[in-house]
Amino acid sequence: MKMEFEYIEKLVELVSRNALTELSIEDGEKAVVIRKEKELVTTHTAVTATAPAPIVPHAPAQLQAQPAEKPKTEEEPSNLIKITSPMVGTFYKASSPGSAPFAEVGKSITAGQVVCIIEAMKLMNEIESEVSGKVVKVCVEDGQPVEFGETLMLIEP
Image (tube, rainbow, N blue to C red; front, side, top):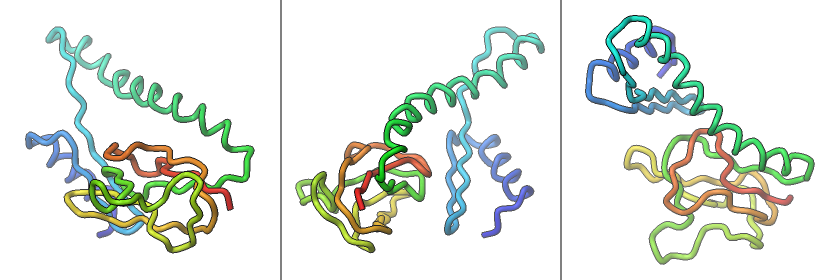
């Protein structure tokens, strides 16, 4: 699937016309997520309805980005390597409830080893480490939703 502007416009129209709140499409390293925010309408005047619309989506994004950036700044000076989510989905540390986690803090992992599962659109995607080392921190909880590029684990090479 080639991510072209016209194709993305059609996806936006699809979300707008239907009762969808989110649409996520992935192709290799490319991903598109389209979310429909809840509309806040207090009056029916054109000025009131249009002025807040651009402001509302930016405020939550800034609020979400600030807490995530603070821990990253503390970690950046160190030699830790981040394993990030290649997609939007739900993080699972083990193959099934009650099973041993793929990777635990303090345990060593090797390049190519499965470290977690990301469920996306009812598909279980095994995430493999690209580096060998020791797991220093698991940054997300089991069953927690994750975003594309979100740090899942920190590895000490």
